Length: 205
Image (tube, rainbow, N blue to C red; front, side, top):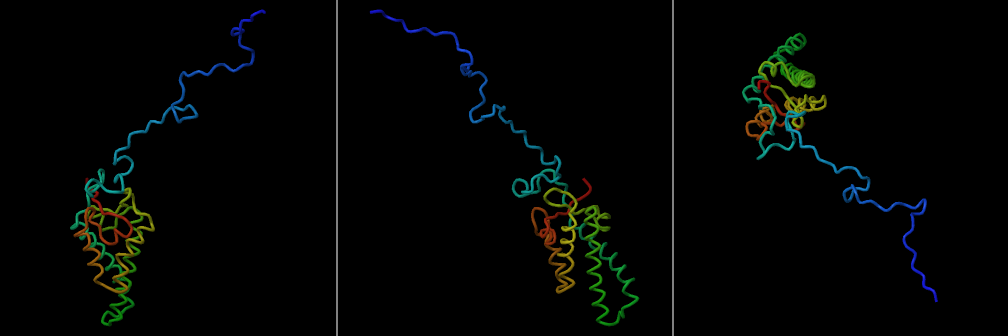
């Protein structure tokens, strides 16, 4: 009875797959062999957007990178300058057609003033964030989320919230709306600012 030794390992047959290599294998979970993603460090708050993150800074204060807020006195002076300017224009236009001694004349002037002021402020703010009064007092209106000039829709909406209620129903609305910034924190926003998420900042910094 003859014994046969088991055949030893022979040469690799042509066409057979090479044994797998474990060198430089991709990290677990990455089937494509691409290098692991390295997250870039977050940019500083003042890179690209002057206001940084829209959520506010630590403790609810202004976010890093935000320009100084516009002073309340400067904002009031800007409103007075704009009101005097618009009143002068309306008086010259309406005065030729309205009897100043009649109640209807006063009502007409008030209505025209409100509409002209609304259009005037909307157009000015949508252009560069400043009316004539704001240019003189060195403040401007900016979007809270990124510091840019308000969009036309935001500019018209902001001016409408400030102007139209006082013309249509309640003259005291201007006091309530404008006085809101005396107590609002941290951005000193009036009601019309909160309505469209704008803020008034200084241009001197």
